[in-house]
Amino acid sequence: MRTHVVSDVHMASADLAAAANGSELFVCLGDLLLYLDYDDPTQGAFAEMMGSENTAQYIALRLDKKWDEARAFAMAVWQERSADGDPASRMGALIEIVERQYTELFEAMPTPALLTPGNVDLPRMWPQYLREGHQMLDGEVAEVGGLRLGFVGGGLPSPYRTPNEIDPEEFGRKVAALGAVDVIFSHIPPAVPELTYDVISRRLEVGSGALLAAIQQTQPRFVMFGHVHQPLKSRMRIGRTECINVGHFRATRRPFVIDL
Ligand SMILES: [Mn+2]
Image: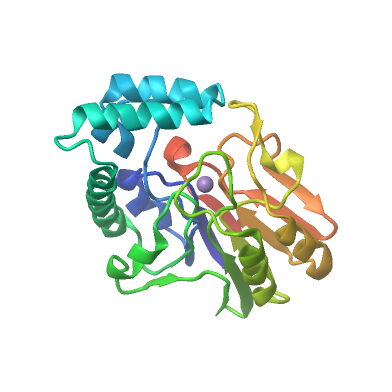
């Protein structure tokens, strides 16, 4: 079964529609929204609300791991720029941008598609945007072509405080709910340094220990994920399981192709 997998789309909607061409199964592993673009401070929801110069400064603070300072800076900028300076109006402005991003993105999302959310997603909003043929799966198994495909979405708590970071116990329950499957599709990788280390930002992203334990215990044929944009290793074996980072779609504009 010729399968195309994308992850970390981050609003690359123009190339998304073609990503399923020639495939028998299309899978999307989330991070559909673009909040901040570390490579381009003019892009994304934050830039729309705060302006590109402030965004460049905010990115610099985060790259320096000055999390509290970055947060205080964003708050001060919003107070200056918005009519009311009210933090609640900032959330309202963000939701409006997210609605616009999801409208455009789900319009471009191929059908049929199996989808799980990332950490830069608001999955509670997905049901209103999913089109016919879009199936959202999270902590659930789909049987396709005689294969059991398990899906687990979202991220784990991190200093970035992205919107869909799940309590590790709850994340573990979602992984456990899959049982033995042929393939696990997850937004985040298992907690293995080679897979979680980003060689450009030079930091360890958060992977899942529960996912690693499930791989060791149940040995699915494949585990596919995204989340780490420039990983130290994009493929490695854990026992009989081939672990694959499917790539950063916003950068590559190409799906990962595999015959399942
Ligand atoms: Mn992510």
